[in-house]
Image (cartoon, rainbow, N blue to C red; front, side):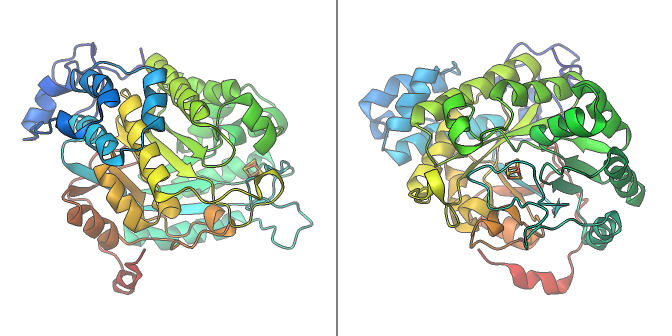
Length: 428
Ligand code: SF4
């Protein structure tokens, strides 16, 4: 059992599905009977209308309503269903049970410190070799300046990932964390995918994973990011990201971080060569680790961006809106032990992310302030959103917007004022 898994209301160990809402922490009651939810005035009003659910999905819907866990085979049946509204209805019950009517967002700043990478994943249009014209590498001073410029806007998190850089030294990474920490001790530094952590451990720090994570944490790392998971199936990985860590290695970095009391998010990159069974298998492995550690705060699936694709991925078309909503709904229904489901608007676009709030999603990710990875791959969505745009999208969808921190805890009354000129960025 993870270190902090104790109900904050009565100190008991949790016996049921855990959730975390309004900063109350973990609960020992089933969500439907949770005092934390009741204290917040959240009523669980959603019910299935079985007449609107196709016959073949009703046994799964009944399990969900009874708060029973669905199987991987059930997840595959849901993936094969084409009644999107029925999936949305089932997912909505799970969403409301876990999060009431709240939908969250974070005020954050993305930084990609470098795109220089020793690997060449087939789906990645971001990475470059040092000799390439589009290779970049920011100096620590530049990164610190960008983050200090964002602090007065009210950001609570800096989200920082990069390629597997061959020559940056251990001291560079530690100095970067130290300098960011010194800027504002309250600023949450979410950084490095599990594959970057392995790269640092094996090639740069030359230390075990745990020692590497402890060293990074000592210098200011607040949480690790969920990237690099792609699709766990080894056959798929061999074709789209040969040489990258295995599923077991990705999971092990998160397991180690969770065992240190850390929290993290998890992801899935879908809509390329994987099958629906591969997606269900991916979800199964995430749910299994979550059963073991409880350390995942949220799940963030995103579709492959095909604009710049070539080789084995050249023929891939962008995932349809239908497929993206279905993937979110199935994820929400299956991942009964991960509290939050995030719609990554950079991939979906804000209009579809807004619609996804009726398909199981309870979080619209963040302001981001400058996304590079998807945009270098050809994404046509904006590179940032304002708080006003995110709140408007949530409110219009009938949910109550709440700013959150990096662990999806609600922040009440801490939002700061944006610069007036940024209000012009309300767009999708
Ligand atoms: S996905 Fe990550 S590891 Fe793979 S090439 Fe791109 S930056 Fe490198």
